Image (cartoon, rainbow, N blue to C red; front, side, top):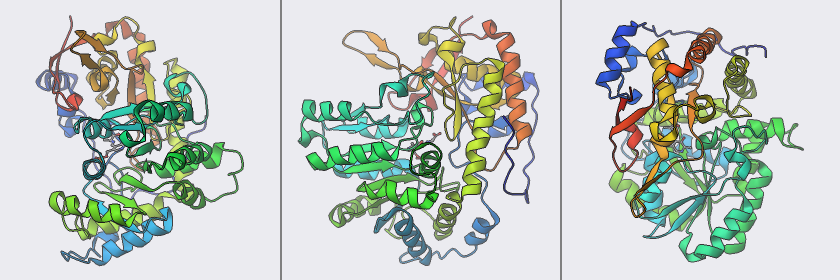
Length: 458
Ligand code: F0G
């Protein structure tokens, strides 16, 4: 595959530092083999996340100077509200400091003890926010979405039969909302088709259950629809986005991804009554409704980011860049989730490292190997993040997918950086039997991957 061409030139640069292997080794021990605890300055290429790591454009930086920092009624709020209404069609917008704050306020308002939330696959913070309220986060993705080798073009789709079965099993009164995560982050950054959104919408209408989108990567999803879904090739991305959101009641948005900013989020919706209820918690937890935990300048950067992210030259480059990294890794013969997702390449660690059982965190072992040898930071989306203990049976339940995510920050790295990553993986593959499993020394009951401490098994 040909490398992508960046539709921008670089105006400001940020130096990268090379640490010695010895320094990295020491840092790994100090960090309890948890890459979240490594100082970012000791990372050469940071593929931990695409969240809050985007490079803003000159237009966004200029927008920061136009921040109106009034406590109430900042002009930047009205700009954001107009952009959101124009793009998504929702008249009510509540800014939050990031996506999980939107989840917290939304779920605390709509859920009660024992409720169930179906989703294609919940992302970690979404799952944690649901479970923290003693509710069940139920994943209903199509079976193809759990098979890394299956090349279904819309592996993020929700299975309508699984959703219908859940509604029959739990009853409508226990399901206050259905969610769709686009793209489906925990399942490989895979898109959801418009056809599927329509299908899920009609089931939700039938039972009168609100449908909300977790919209963190909505623009990447829309671009996949344009590329892959019959009938949409001649649509603009903006029109596809409008159609996607026309079938749902609202969205939770982490602007740190497709908002092209470093911080921010919002809840947007149609229902005035729910908007009024959400306002109460927003004011209590985040701030007044026209800033919600952000500065006026941040709101301006989000509005401008939303206008830029749907530009097709940008999206073409973005999706090509990730696909290019995927093609380099595949050429080496390392198994990845196919097709390549929008924001990241996911390595199938279960398949790549059969000598490490899931109880010894094979995906984390690969993350550690990549940092140790080459200063590359990646993230584990596997048993460290998702394994659960069944205390009654005294057993651990491991997730089906055991993945290493190489997440590509937006507009940050060049082709040479990606070639460096592929080269590091090539060297790891040659000595992959040397990668060691790990055991857990400390794990918190929620979101344990952020703070866990591990030791290598020698
Ligand atoms: N929903 C999805 C699909 C996400 O990927 C994330 C964050 C959130 C919600 C929460 O948003 O970080 O602004 O609070 N994902 C990041 C990641 C952290 O690395 O994938 P947030």
